[in-house]
Length: 606
Image (tube, one colour):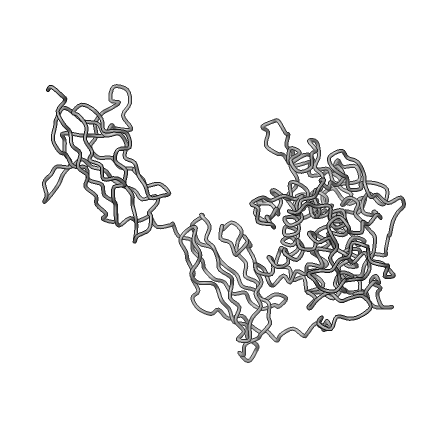
């Protein structure tokens, strides 16, 4: 149930330690503590007691990659007109699920390239969490045909998290359950992410964030794995990210085994034709807490025995297996996966893909000695707009020469409201041949004020570079031209009002519609040299007058504003007993002026 990011705690852990983890958890470790709500009441959610005992995450699939390469399933097919792909049946990933993992990798590559998220890691987690959405049981949009639910988090063998979503995602009105292909706790999905905004994401662009949709869930899981400035090409960050999903050595080893297995080659199978794992492990062991189907609580796919219980992993996980074989550590050495993204195409079974580059051992770190600010120290932007300049630094060695290939992390303080693309508060950029690293375009939020952007060298103990940033109040909208939307003569009879909305104007600025522009309307005399407010003739009713003063005439109205289309309909214009042609003058702060004639005639027979 991990993508709620459960933390397993050893039995007998001190309650104070448990409380600290609950307060920080993403399911029970890194997300805000889940809250209580009701479907019908108006009470605000309340966190569970801080001393609630927790025994870690719920059950998950513990099946390991195959020792041998069985015949591929009959559902293997010819992708994009190419040759028929064969290989271990377990290497087949349902088409829509595979597309979701690759799309998530691409999205995160664009917004946080320094994370180096490989889609095979998402596939490894998806295999362990839900059996690749139960073998690809999803519709054309990627939504599971039936909800995939974890066990009830009622404190019996799992964390105790009372209902936080009114059953919206998990159909449970008493306690939360992990939901979807990547198993998010509802509170984690909707409010447990950075700044309390939730880890939920819209991965398929339909305007919704649905944990039951594999595109949305895969993107959300990828963003979590990349959180806190992680670089998944390093062993420490890779292990930390997976353990943040479920803090279990067995879980870590199982995910890393599938991750390494998928890196040796996968192929696409039709949706619904994926191989379903059966063995269960985790807090519930092989006998309890299995994922449930639909909303009936019916168990499915639960193992009949204890399942695989491999030894606890070494710090860096298993070594990458040969095609069709599980990871096995070398004698006397800790097992390690090969981090980073594989290149080329998936190899056909029984041979090595010539287009796939052979993984190279990690290179020695660049001799980075310092980060140097390039360009202005200060950057600023009006609220709601993009910063025109981006922070930039140069990595240099001890001799002052540029260092290429050094990862640099740009970090924003969360309260600032400013964000990098995709709402990120931190991004990693690798220096180019010239040693330069430039932060991606920064968008100013609605919150004004000053804050600091920090640039740090990932994995290096060199001084950070600080940039002062300021979000200024957005300038008042401008209009350099006012025109009437109709040229019909404006006429009424003395003592009567002009038709409601009779005077409508349009404001533009440099030829474009000007929204939100303040306009002042004044009844003026016809003095061509110096028109002043007219105390006779047409008038507006005082909008603030009450009681006996209601309807009190005023001949200057302020506080009028154009709408989103740059249009403004003036309020009702009344007349007294005087007849003739009167002038209405409309002005803006930027000097735009429009004069409108109002004709008042005598009543018939007067």
